[in-house]
Length: 308
Image 1 (cartoon, rainbow, N blue to C red):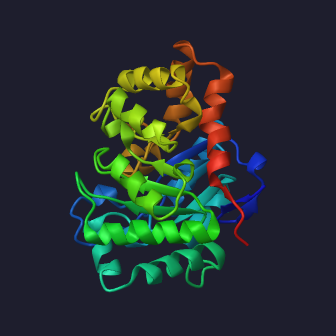
Image 2 (image 1 turned 30 degrees about the vertical axis):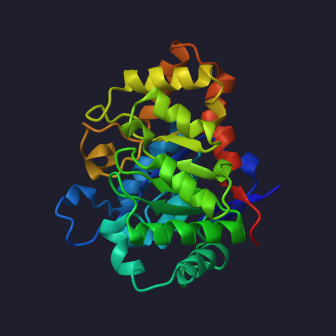
């Protein structure tokens, strides 16, 4: 059995606990990103928010901020130590808008080598090792720069076994991402496709699940994109069809205004899924075993790998 690589070191899969599979804790977006609500730069605020998450029953989250969006592994290590929340850090890059300056002059193998170093040896000189690989695509397309990242992610995965967790723009290109990764030798069972609740179509979700890939329903609480009542219906349908163990839940709360810890109370915060959404699922008929699969067992299965 493999281990799960957190910012504080490796842990046994059984120690992971309730896990959000796609979140952002500290971000330093590029200066040309005009919407500064996307900058989540306060270690103090993050410590308060993750403490609330822990007290609500949360035990782990995957921090999906990559290098090209201002990843801060040392801050993540400090926050994890202060709160007791296991944090898994990512290697890789986001979508073309952000990754192109980092990747266009480098070969696929050079990109893969950097991912492998960050997974095995650590990120720069921080001593923090990544525990998941990220790749992303744009709306209705995978650009040449993005294709390089996907192919590099696949090669890093083949070397390490680490999970590939993706960004889709509004849920598009999921099947194309899977096929691209599969062409590089990645089993779909080791892929988590992100943001599928931006494309709330049961047949689309079903087509992704049939490949064996895992589905990220990770916009929970963002009612402006989709009412949570619709997310509930889709989740219930997928569980009824036997796909419950391929589902992962999260909020992707990548704005300061989404967190009460930043002083705004309009956002859902990290406690929303635990205090509101999961009880709603139980009211609609899911049992403890089915919810545990999405929140504990599937994350533990996906995040473990055998790299030294």
